[in-house]
Image (cartoon, helix red, strand yellow):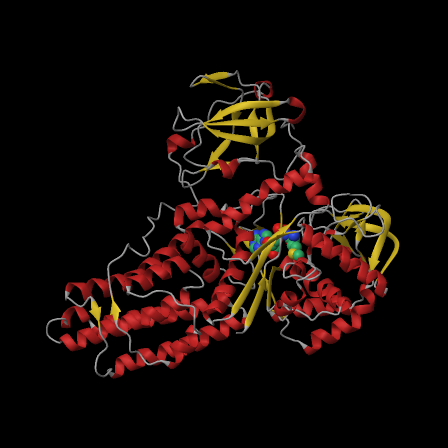
Length: 640
Ligand code: MSP
């Protein structure tokens, strides 16, 4: 049995996952399921990146110790992946004992080999990207003589400290040779060109330890140092399948090298330069392919928690359905470029592609079959030329679909599948089975059978993308998903010879009622009228403070209220009641920062005192949106 090993980046745990984090993970899930359909043995690794300065700072800002802080976010990741049917094999955390032991052993090994040495680092550091900014990055922007991070544009900080270095410079030629020998190492190829030009312009040795923070893997043999977070995190790809774990050598050798590593464009340099160099130094083989995707944007900006424009995948699934969101993200975002996300586009695609093109086709086929007593759909004695054409088109589509999937262009692969969905619709309409059901029963039966065969193939092609919905489609055709064989090889080699027992299940995809331009609110004359103005002194009377919701209880006596315990740092912990149950689950708000009216007179509700009020906004769909600082700030901070 062939194997397939796929990885996602491991996520920083200073915030809950958003649509961008879901995107990397979803692509890996689709790749993993696609390979399962090829009857391969699959290992799918994902997890969380838990050490480093950024996490330590975020934890300190809310007065938690880092371990407690990172632990509090893990359920949010695991729950989101569960909801989206992300079928990972292992969820690795860089605080796992196996991982930390293996990283220490890895460092010791490289010290012995002479690839790591002690010296001094002086230069700039971006905490948000956890990266040392090199001279080459400087021209990207400077404010008050401090360089800006070339990736996120934030101000960097000056660092001068003793450090251990990895001899990256001595791998420069080997890396260039590797890129030359493996031109398809990175998809898309344009990214490879950037990497090559960066390496050609000269590599400096890489600082891989820090003395000014202590939240990291202790550096072996030198207790003053902790391991630099990227030297720790990148190794998850090998430790996750057993590298450096006693007794797991065989397991490791059966999985490594990874067949596909998925990552966003912001972290290419780490994966295409540092990571291969680390592997070369360790005597391990290179991953077969890096698939680099673009960013999901809101307007002009990358979607991110810190920008405050993050879309919550949980809320999206509740409104539109899990498989609908999976479909939209993978099919309609251009994988290798940045793509905007809009609600109206999502709604239109659900309606046109899913409800109209695919859902209706299934519906009409089954409705007709049942109406004319053909619940058991048998094959005809012989197929007409039109049906043979449809069969041949399907084979051609499967071949093209597989080519795009193998190359990593999943969005294009599904565009190919939709060409077929359109072809099948065309066939169905041209044959007009509803007109010939009585006059030409054999031809009618053939059209229904051909359409069922085509839908069966579509269900398998789309299963990696929409597993639940496609299992439902198969069940409507009287079939069950089977991954015990190479499904695509079967579809390509077998003639149409199946019998289907069709039943009417639930509607596969419901249409979304498209509201008046969802993104914009049209205001009436009445609404445009402003409230009376207030003076600055009036405004100063309101004390607004930032707090973290550290406990959420459902108040049984009410159907609306939650009881929060909110931490305001030096200003204490308060009990605040909030009537938002219909908009948020407790998990969605637990551990989140928000803005509170702090000097509102206490008020009793259902026998309990509320000592403040939390602020929200309503979006165009009348959903409440939490208002929070752009990034975590100390609890108790007053808004001014
Ligand atoms: N912890 C590092 C990765 C270490 S891998 C050894 C990290 N974490 S992250 O949480 O900041 O980002 C993880 C992944 O999410 C990256 O691939 C990143 O590109 C992706 N995304 C985060 N925001 C995104 C969008 N708005 N759009 C698409 N993907 C984005 O980097």
